[in-house]
Image (cartoon, rainbow, N blue to C red; front, top):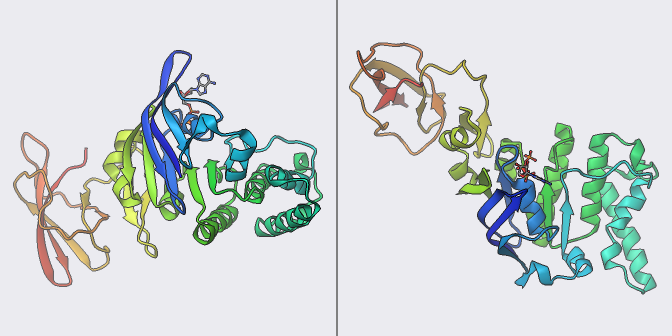
Length: 332
Ligand SMILES: Nc1ncnc2c1ncn2[C@@H]1O[C@H](COP(=O)(O)OP(=O)(O)OP(=O)(O)O)[C@@H](O)[C@H]1O
């Protein structure tokens, strides 16, 4: 449905996007993640036709983005920019109704449909009680919900959201993302979301694009992308990755830098039945003989230090009475 082919962009002579490829299909939710300034918003602006790439091209529904007429495109694509809504004096209902403009024709019966759509969307976003309030009297989070409601009222085939949950409390983060999730499943909506919250990205997205310095460094399912090594490489922080106990998707736990666990080993089962026993061993670069599961286990007991190089340990993992050997290195 939406495709970026080797798009590049310079700003003030500086390359801020380099050869980015992206494919968003009907019914899919793709997350774009990466540190501040890596080019996520610039990518969204190119994808929605707000700006043109210096190199490469963007295609939407098989047609070059530059060939789309603005009104026609607004019927098919809604965009929630990072800055959200300005504090304007229109009421909540008026702003949400603006989402219907691209669909409005000269026929009076369409206006009735528009009212119904606006009422439904206000209900779905929990804004019915505030429908007559001017937007400038709302909190930042409430304004964000109005912006999302306006995009929903637009009833697009493709939705681009730049950090939609930034100002929302946890209940509204979940209710808005759940609503979008249901919408894409029921109507085949294609959704691209810029996320800073990696855990929400893992919960809701089919695929993630991890960006660094204007380029995509990794793309894949949340378990492919949300690995400690990639997060360290891109954000420069060493997280603990664990699996969500219900959904099983990776979740990123942060720990204050400088207070790292003394030892970490990437293994793969729920920790509860596992016992880890550290003992003297020889150096080995890879853990061996592990089940294909993930999680971090710490070993706090130091039994042996290699006199010259990194301390190394052979450890024994016991799971339900079954023993597995692995080698472990001190986490530097
Ligand atoms: N109007 C502009 N003029 C010059 N440079 C800009 C402009 N807008 C963005 N940039 C630069 O382009 C780079 C990419 O910015 P962009 O807003 O796309 O990053 P981002 O990944 O969305 O960041 P954040 O997570 O902070 O929102 C940054 O280095 C930024 O300073």
